[in-house]
Amino acid sequence: MSPESTGPAAVIVLAAGAGTRMKSRTPKILHAIGGRTMVGHAILAARGINPQRLALVVRHERDRVAAHLQSLDPQAVIVDQDDIPGTGRAVEVALAALDAESAVEGTVVVTYGDVPLLTSELLEDFVTAHQTGSNAVTVLSAVLDDATGYGRILRDADGTVTGIREHKDATEAERAIREVNSGIYAFDAALLRESLTKVTTNNVQGEKYLTDVLELAAAAGGRVAALVTEDRWQVEGANDRVQLSALGAEMNRRTVESWMRSGVSVVDPATTWIDSTVTLDEDVRILPNTQLHGTTTVARDAVVGPDTTLTDVQVGAGATVTRTHGSGSTIGEGAAVGPFTYLRPGTVLGATGKIGAFYETKNVTIGRGSKLSHLGYAGDAEIGEDTNIGCGNITANYDGEKKHRTVIGSGVRTGSNTVFVAPVTMGDGAYSGAGAVIRNDVPAGALALSLAKQRNVEGWVATNRPDTLSADLAANATAATPSSSTHQASTEEGTQS
Image (cartoon, rainbow, N blue to C red; front, side, top):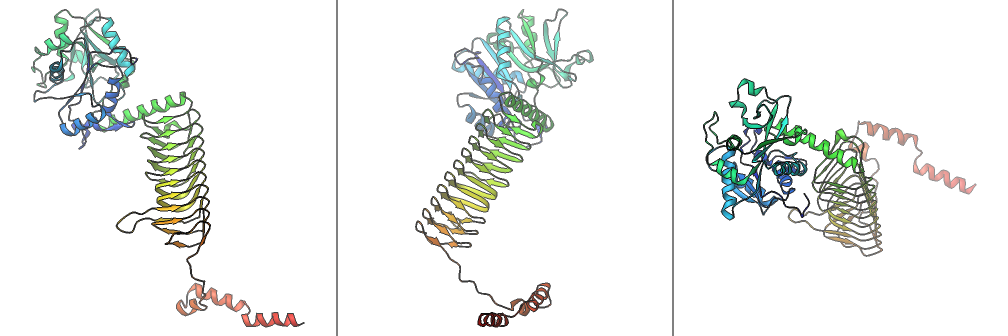
């Protein structure tokens, strides 16, 4: 529905179940696929049809679930289910809570917190079918090859829906029916309110079934209908981890296919995982074994992968990210990262910059065109533009108690294995020699050296490591090389002649 259109009077999302078959300390609806919790997907679908009011029914792990729901949708009404079990009772308390503010009039939609592939588009078609048919009750159904465990849709000879029979209460003939109840309904609010007062717990489960409302509505002369969806995945719930995994794989398949149809090249869809919260531009290229999670964005002409995992990373246009694990970072336009690079949160790489092989970065800003090519660590640092950081450089940012910052200017050239002992600053255009340990600030344009003059201790191996391969090879090399005094004499003789 467009933002200007008016949706149903209310949507009630049932999120009270314990989900014991998950065998998890995490409530079932808080398990995540595709970058959101299952209930997060359910709320997104519900809000997509612009309901006038939204109620979320909770019970199991009440405080934990309610806090999560409130963070997702602060305007939703959180409703506690009482000790009376069953979906009918859950809807009854939700409707009463909404009525306490003002009486609900019109269409009430009931969905579940564990049906993550349900879309707003299907819900919109469902509500339209309910309202245009002037139905008292409409149920969303699907036809399954194996309907075990599902409630069956009961119809009379002319196809009119007469009720729903739960699997445990069904006869053998009813269990042969393949059209199943999704648990998603649209009700006339007045009929729903009145019917729920008549629903009992006289069934095998001892629960107050919401499905009983259909039979009560039909008996009262109301029209009961079913909208059959051909997309069974949209009404599939996750009761255990096997089903959760299957739903996750199907959601990912749909997400990847959608991006490909939008102009993204995915070389190997089977090994590519993209959260539903990720944003990609046209002409992005995703290589095999790549996972994009959270709020990651990838701009036009960038290439990501292979073997790359990015979470909450912004990748600029034309950048390349190869065999990299990154989170909470920004990669500038035309920059290059990888292979075998670890970007920790707070990494900001400027345009055309480079973070190369076997590098780890954290909380560091790297200016335009600067390069950290290989084998190093940069943390809690600021690096200017067009600076080249040599192989093996590290910022020693932690003194055992506190973290300190390193500031390296623009146009700097550092020798291999330079260590910056923070806090320290290196000015624009400065150089460091190989192996330098920078403990004090380096002025702009200066060369920083910290190593003592080389001294060779001749014969050390023979004295300290006798009877080793090194000693034997050194002795052989010494015997084959003229002594320095002989060499010097020969040179002097040659000069005199």
